[in-house]
Each structure stands twice: as structure tokens, then as C-alpha cells.
Amino acid sequence: MATDTSTDILRALRQLISTRCGIAFPEGKVAWLHTKLADHVQALGLKDLGAYFQVLSLEPARSEIWQEVFRRITTNETYFYRNAAQIKAFTEYLLPEAVERQRGKLFRRLKVWSAACSTGEEAYTLAMETMEVLGAEVADWQPQVLATDIDPAAVREAMAGQYSGRALANVPRTYLTRYFRRAGDGYSVAPEVRQLLTFKVLNFADEAGMAAQINMDVIFCRNVLIYFDSDFRRRVVHHLFGSLKPGGYLVIGHSESLRGIYDGFTTVRCAGTVMYQRPEA
Image 1 (cartoon, rainbow, N blue to C red):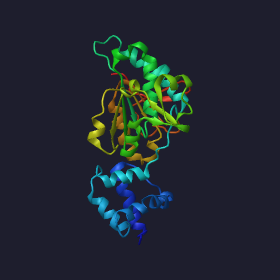
Image 2 (image 1 turned 60 degrees about the horizontal axis):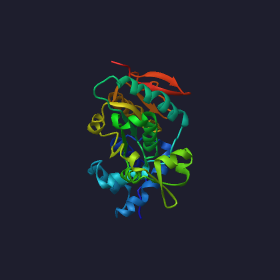
Image 3 (image 1 turned 180 degrees about the vertical axis):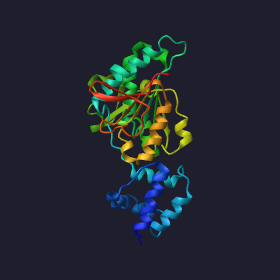
Image 4 (image 1 turned 30 degrees about the vertical axis):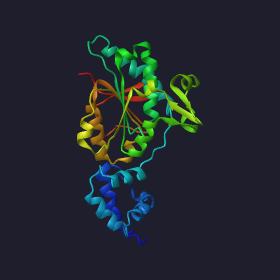
């Protein structure tokens, strides 16, 4: 395959990808990006990156060709109960606070969003912990866990709910019995957990799609913002702020920070970690 690796083409391709999904690639990752996409160019029967760029320029972000690009450039490594301190904060502080805030209201509904859910481990973790907190009141509250990701293949895998090996290493043994069913060499998420979840493909660059996510009590958006440039990061956080109910919480990666990005949140420390709260109205 003849491959055009000129600096101008790669720069234009990097900018196009950033525009379509927000992911920014520094100079040091140009070779990595080229490696990730080279065989896609070949699979499409195109002669070089220049032709590839022209095709991508004409296709909308929701097209199949762009979905394949997103699949190739995103990282989907995750597992159940990743970052125990943040899950502990969710279970012992954030969720009980949301329950108490709504307990006296006529209409009660808990909504949690696992943004950039990858293959679903985080979303199912949040669902199980929600069931633990609510106990016999689950039916009364009708909790909803929204799980979204830009990669359709990851979302399909999440919907399948089949896991084994390292992904399950941190799951409490009692939970494997309570919330999973044996499936071959691994486990399948139990139907009573699955019914709490809604899965969607969502691109953070989709302004309308982001704006449609509302009335969330807690949003987990971990280890994602680091892949965006500062302007796109600010746009995403602005949307996440708007998606939360007053008093709701945003949880980001433990190595991430909103300092200098968005000042609408109040910083809250609990369970040995940092959360970001949308102030009460």
C-alpha cells in the first residue's frame, strides 16, 4: 500500500478527528495514530492517507466509517470496581445524599450516568451499588443508570454483559453470587441488574445529544478529559454541569482536575477522594 505520511496530511487528519470527537493527539503520538489507522486505509481500498482524509471529510461522525475510526483510536481497558475510593464515595456519600434530597418529594427518581462507559464494567458496578443502597426500596425509586460510549462495538459488548478473568477480579465474592450468573468460563450480569441500565452510543462532540442528558444525580466521567484539548474539555464539562440536578455530583478520574477548566462546581472531599458538586439552586 502506498501511504502518504506527509506532515500536512497528518496534521489535517489529527485536526479532523479532534473536530469530530474531541480527542487531541500531540506530536508525540503521530506515529501511533498512523499505525492505528494504516490498515483501515488499506481495508477501504484507498491508496494513501490523503485519500483517506478526503473520504473522512465528507462522512458525518455517525457514519460507519467514522465509528470504525473511533473504535481504533479509543482505549477501552476497564474493570469492575475500578478506583475503590470513588466507588466507596458513591455508595456511602453521593447516592445516600441524593436519596435524602428526594425522599420527601411526590415523584422520586434516581439517575446515574456512566459517560464513556467502555465495555460496561463501570455502569454495572454503579447499578449493583445502587441496588445495595436502596435495598427493598429499589422498585419504589426506579433507578436508572445511563451508560454511553462513542464506540458502538464497546457498547454492544457492554449490552451483552458477559465477563471473565481480570475484569471481575475486584468484584466481592458475595456479589458474584447475588448479581451474576455463571456463563461458561465467566459470568453474565443478572437480569435484575441489567434492567436498571440503558445503553447508548454518544459522541461528546454531539451538542444535541449531550444537551439531551438531564436530571442526573451523579455522573461518572473518568479518565476521559485527559484526551481532549482545553477548549473541548471546557465544552464537555459545561454540558456535564448542565446535565446534573442542583446538588448533583460529577466524578472524574483521580488524576484529572477541573482547575482552570470550569469554575461552576464546588469541590467536595469524601472517602479519601475529590468530587465536584453542582451547587444547590
